[in-house]
Amino acid sequence: VTEHQSVRAFLRFLEESGDLLRVSALVDPVYELGAYLWETATGPAVLFERVAGHKLAAFGNLLNSRGRIARALGTEVGALHLLASGAIDRRCPPVLVGEGPCTEVVLEPPSWAGLPVPRFFAGETGSYVTAGVIVAKGRTGKRNVSFARLKILDDQAAFIGIAPTHHLAGLAREAAAAREPLEVAVTIGNHPAVLLAAAYYLSLGDDEFEVAGALLGEPLELVRCATVSLEVPAHAEIVAEGLLYPWNQAEEGPVSEFSGLFQDYGRGPVVTVRCITMRQGALFQVILPGYAAEHVHIGAVAIAAGLEWRLRKLVPAVAEVAVTAGGCGRLHAVVALHRPERGDADRVIREALTCVGLIKRVTVVDDDIDIHNPVSVEWALATRMKADRDLLVLPGMISARADPLAAGGRVAKLGINATRRSGDRADWTVAAPPPAILRQVRAALRAGQFPVSKGATEPTRGDRAGAAAEDTTPGVPIAWWT
Ligand SMILES: Cc1cc2nc3c(=O)[nH]c(=O)nc-3n(C[C@H](O)[C@H](O)[C@H](O)COP(=O)(O)O)c2cc1C
Image (cartoon, rainbow, N blue to C red; front, side, top):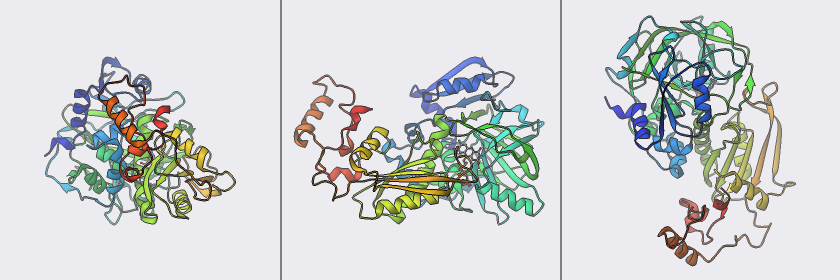
């Protein structure tokens, strides 16, 4: 059994690199723990050593930036999109092992009260498990792995909030039709590869654990559950096994969505827990919900990975896809094209706006633009987009219920083509010093012979990996503005 598939290995790495804040004060799970995560939302990961009323420690803000996600997967931030989109083709089946740390301790009696489940925001009606990766299987035996929040109702029962378009909701409907409860396992405290994989939009029946294996670079180790016919990551910190009763419904009340706004989705199914196992000294993971960096970034990286994989199959010029933080990590995408052909941008726009319900704005740019920098993207709009030619508004498109403006499941969508068109200008060269002099000055700056001003040693787009390397222009000097 290999310890590096445990989130503890990454927490240790963060601590050694000074990127973990230990809070040793007694912290109240009601509002206080969430307020700590709120205040440090873009900072270090946080380990709460003492949670009032509980034996278990808790941690949060684990994957709150693209850089942190890249580090967790052992790659550079610039290469993250290739690792994440490539994982769909490199899927690696999991392997069943005899035993794993997640079964070391059995919580008796099995009760949600044994876990330090926080209450987050004024305006919500209960405490939520937010980092629960739910494992379930359809009647054909195909596995689904996804996030869904659980609001604790009592010692055994929890409301589970699942968007009707999610595969888990489909499995619940299947179970309802057969008049049988759906077996589920809620796994908490997973390796970042599992967390990211759970947020991918794959086809129904595709196993997210295979994507987790591709992200890990080896098969994910699973163990059998005790009371349900499911397998779970052997290195999860905590596993709660239970039954989802589709006909046993509870009212949720207002809940914070990724937009930061409250949604009230009405009634939804209840999960009853039957068995809880955990590691010795288990760590309870918390993902701050609402418009918070970690909630936003995990979804953004996973959705962008799926989009990039799909769009590149349609248009080989697709260099990279970003789902932006300003667009809540769900609603807005930016696509970079390498030397697009006529019609490529339009095909990308139409496909992106239909294949992921949530995506309602797509901006297409050339790959000299840094799609992760909103200033760079706006510069492309300012210099390359004509509003009477390059905007496509698609009214009444199918959306997702979490979109803050969706009405009857529909919303208007926008495509923006901000790529250079040859007829628009005779010369697209960006003013810059001669490349040879620039290289020489950069080398001198790096060698410390001159005082370095902010941004001066940042590589511009012209230096970035891949497509732009062969360009003769030094690239768009947007780094000055960040
Ligand atoms: C941190 C995080 C929390 C999430 N919470 C929920 C949730 O409570 N309910 C929900 O329906 N989707 C939630 N999602 C989105 C789904 O997990 C995600 O869309 C997943 O891909 C759906 O699985 P499926 O493709 O198998 O249907 C969350 C995503 C993230 C990254």
